[in-house]
Every structure is written in structure tokens, then in C-alpha cells.
Image (cartoon, rainbow, N blue to C red; front, top):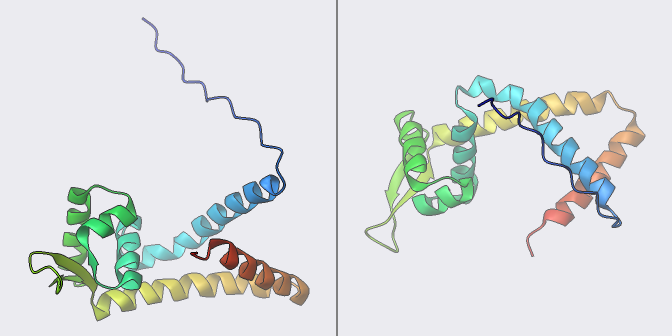
Length: 156
């Protein structure tokens, strides 16, 4: 029997709602922006999933393994392996949960925080250089757009 060729699923028509086209463009632009800046992450020596998990640990403070797995949308055994590698590199440490003596939380070490901050600095420097090539009026417009996006994603 011949193999079936996989046809892409038909695209749903774009809703006729105010803002849909802008939302679609922002979504695409955000993905492309992050992908272009991700090139700076190779200097960390960590894979994308490990950097992402480290970021959650750094910014969420000591966090339960189950919460970290949920935040990263992976199963607990996968997170256990990721954390073990980060721990082996001295980037995180397991600490007893003070509220639940049986529980363990994952906290960032100074080395882990530093590695993450260096990576963020590299990405921001790269983006800043691109922004500096724009006229002042366009930089001001992007600064206002960043404020609006922050308002859109602000937790309620």
C-alpha cells in the first residue's frame, strides 16, 4: 500500500474581529524576535529547555518540582532529569520545603543567577544595537508599544 502524503490541515478563516490582524502580526513578530535573539543563548552552554527551566527557578524563587514541571509543561520525570543536569553544573540546588518537610524545592545558585543574567544581557545588547539603528521617533514608538504589550499581559 502506498504511503499517504500528509496534507496540511486547511486553515480556519481569520475571524472578523477588531484587532485580529494586529494580534496575528504581533504573535509572529514576537516569535521571530525571540528566535533571532536565541542565537545569543549558545554561549551559555545550556540547551533551550535547561535555560527555560533555570529562568523559572531564578525568577520564581525556590519552587516545587511539580510546579516547575507544570510551568515548563513537561512531565515530572522529564523535569527531574533537567534539574539533575542543572544541579550537576552547580546552577541550582535542592532545598527542603520549610512548609512540607517531605517536599523539596529547587532554588538557583549564585552561579545559576549569574549565567542567566549574562545571557539576558547578551540578548538585550543585541536588541539594543538593532534599535539604535532606528530613527528616534521609531524607537519612541516601540517603547510605547512595549508599554502597551506589558499592560496586555499583566496578571489581573
